[in-house]
Structure formats: structure tokens, C-alpha cells
Length: 440
Image (tube, rainbow, N blue to C red; front, side):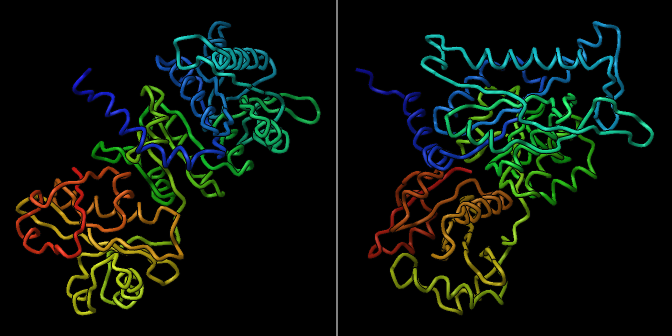
């Protein structure tokens, strides 16, 4: 018998931590854009396997395909090309068949890959049903600034009723970047527009777009793991982005502005990037959220009354140590709060121990009326960011009631001896709190 199985234990630990996300995503509708560049990347077969896994977990998938490089290649073989204006391709009648040919080849390739069931592969035993058809109704883009776009079009509407019926029958739906008109015309659409309108009109839970980059980076080259829509808009106007990333970010912002809860940019170069983004807390790309009318901010002295009202029920139950008004006022700069319509609905505190490069997460509380919407996660993320800004390497906490919640978010149980000496001296043996820590 093996005495140690570190790799297997890592897998078990990851699987346990991913279970909340598995449960949260089951039954949800995701629109995923696979650009033509992704179809030709090294990890394309892995992307297909990941999609099969999502389907097996009960996630309803609507895939949107692009074909820009494939169209470029077909046109080049015929010694022709078309200009791109605002990243829309001019599509004259003479080139429409070439566009259809390239798009159809990508669609068939996707359907063939999704039909694989080879033994000894992640697709072993998969029984995926993939449906595609004339579910995107298009209209001509027309003449813009004197440019006649020919058979280039825009999305008029998505046949949501037909798509919902297919999804309810456990089908995966594949939407090409081609739109069809009631008069029998075919239009070449921008794949990002198809994905955006599909996500909005289907009221999807997520829009996910594969891009050439991991996501959006700041000026220092650091990846944004999360952006509010307003911040993403500022980046679109103020930064120079790769065209594929620019298109993807614009689509994400538009989708969340029109009711899609979250949108994600991930790299098709990263093997398993989709799974990391969906099933780990750290993610792998950039997530875009709508601007929240709830504000996460540092606490100030005027918040003390609301914080006391929030903390009092938890203190009475013994879940939190009692704090007087005077103590809260003296330590207000340690706290962050979530404010909703002028009311304090959640708070948390960070107490640094600079000599040990450690910080204590304390007093994390969410109003019972506002639980279940990731406010605790937002507070935890805010505290972790504050700790990193103060160059702290470890975050620890003492709790009597919520151990599992913290374990699911990367904390491990530790001993009293691991705490800073100053904190050890203040430990309340009567409360017998459990101690957890996490490396930042």
C-alpha cells in the first residue's frame, strides 16, 4: 500500500472545492463563443472535451462559432480579399459562397468533434446531441458612411423559443455566424454580435468568449480577474487592445449591460482554462460584472450604527465576539462594508500583525436578509486584497460556527501556536474557537 498519495489528495481537494460551483452551475444556460482562431489552436480537442464535461454536469450550452481565419484563407486561395471596416467584413455577392463554404466547414468540424466517443478519452461514453439551424434571423447592415456592406448583416432576432425547446430536450445548440432573412437571403454576421444577442435574448446566465489572450491586463501587465462594466468601458476607450480582445470585451460589456449576470474572457491557448474559470475561485481569465448598486467600500464613522444593528443578532447567538460602540469607533479603519440603498448589509475587518506578515480576518457578517448572493465572497476578496496591499503573506481567522465555509475557500485548520504571539495571548479558551489560515 502506498504511504502517501499527494497527487490524488490534490485532486480530491480540488474536487471538493469545486463542488459549490458544480451545484451553482447545474441547469444554467451558458453562451460560449468559439472563434475560428480557437478551432485551429493546439488545445482545440481539449476545449471540446471541456464542453462535453459541462454538458454532463447539467449545464445548458449554446455555442456560437466564428470563422474569420478560415474565410480569409478561402478568399486568399481565390486571390481575393475584402476590406474590414470597424471589424465588419464587406461581403459582396461574388464572395458570399466563399463565406458560406468556410463557415460550413467550421460548423461540420465542430459537430464532428462533438460527436466523438473514443474510449480512453474524456469523451468516452459521451452522448452529445448537437443541433444547428436557422435560429439566427439577420438583416442587412446596409450602407454605412458611404460603404455598401453587401451581404454583411446584423442580428435582427434570435429564435429563442426553438432554442429553448432544444435545450430542454438535452441538446447542445450550435449557432453559426450566418443569419437568415424571411426573404431567403443569407447574411455574414459578426460572431461577437451573434453571441451577445443570443446571451441577451436567451437571458443566459453567462456569456463566455475564447480569445487569444488570457483576458484583460492593466498597464503593469497584470491580469484583471474581475472588472465592473464601467471599468471595462474605460479600458475600451483608454487602452490599446488586440482586436480579438477588443471585440470580446465590447461584447461582454454589452451583454452585462443588458441583463446577463456575468461575462468571461478566457484564452483558447490555456489547456483547461474554461474549467479553471468556472470551477475555481481564482479563475483563469477576466470576468465582467454589471455595476452594482451595492457598494463595497472602507467603513467610516457614520457606519457604526448600521454595523451595530448588523452585528447584534450574531453576537447574541455567540457567533461573534461582542464589540461596543466605542470599540467599533476606535477600530473603524479596520473595517470594510457593503452598503445597499444606504443600509449596511455586510462587514468584515482586517487586523494586521506586520512583524509576522500575518493578518486576522475578523467580524465577517452578512445580514440574514441578504445572504446567498456572494456578499461573503466579496468581503473575503476585499480583505485579501487589503492584506496583499499591506504586504501580508498569511490570513488567519478564529471561528466557532462557519468552519466549512472557510475551508471551501482555501483555508486550512491550524493550531494556536501558529498565531502571532500577541494573538495567542488574547485567545479565549472558553470560546474554544477553531483556527484557520490561508497563504496569500
